[in-house]
Image (cartoon, rainbow, N blue to C red):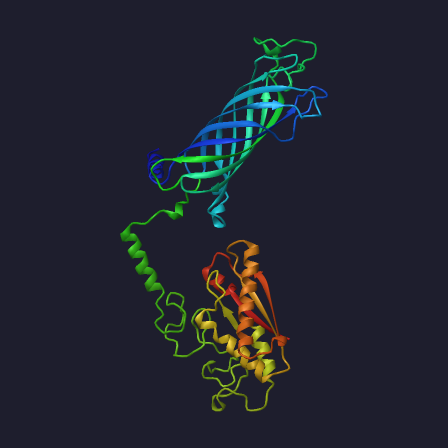
Length: 422
């Protein structure tokens, strides 16, 4: 209990919990209606006022008062006018936080609500005019939210209401139990749920309190750090981003911290030897064709370089890597474009497809476009290097799902363009 109380106190200091809500819009009585009586599909005639309190960022409660009037579909129904009101206590679930919508949007949210209450149906016309039909009700609905500021949100709500113990039809022209007259003291004794209607509204939530944000939009991971904590974190980040050997890979990712100057490296900072002949690419005159050191890494006998280039491609040695959400190549992998350009110049009969990929973070359609931008960027670099555009094609393949989504290193490998020799 002490632990729970402590959590509650801490939560109080992080976000506001109270809000006032004002909404207005449409209503629609579904049943019962007297035969021949119809209402418009969208009848403008409902408003509600509410106050809401969130126990935490995911669950809360609200008390709201709704009122309005039902009327006939003009030209399609006999005339009727029926006033109503309802008062409901409801539980609220912040579905956006429960489903982690913050991973793709910080301005759009969804609430669910369910509860019960009391109400009254009061026909103004027809046989039951001026009869106050007291009812109980159940209500359930969904509220979409768009954050306008830290103090105001736009709401769009759809709710269904089921009335119980209702005696008269919504048009006031007949009774639910035919042949009886409504009795204000007994309501004919009907206690079941026997009437259904719904509302659709637009409105605003006004957030109250001294904190920077409301529970609707609060994300625990976004707690503000103190100046001291922030300075410490910045220092740690600077240390992590140091690149002692200047190979373009920060020290915290570099598995070869003393890479020779000018060496071509992979995403882990390891010197590449694409053809596996023991001579690193930056010293190898033929990086895609194995050969002895005495011949500067080139084969003694004439070998078709294109075969080794295809092998290097198929085994994943030549890739261009990108930072998160970026279409600009990382420094350590930009030289791959030069290798491809030089190969194409030496082999004029060869064409290449450039394939773009992205990791699995973010919306799938966005990642598809990002992968295409990456492929197009490398395509433009090859054209700028003097390669005829007719020898090049490019395509975005979207998310690479073959890697471990939970691993930062694996996601880095997914953020790439690769090449396929045609």
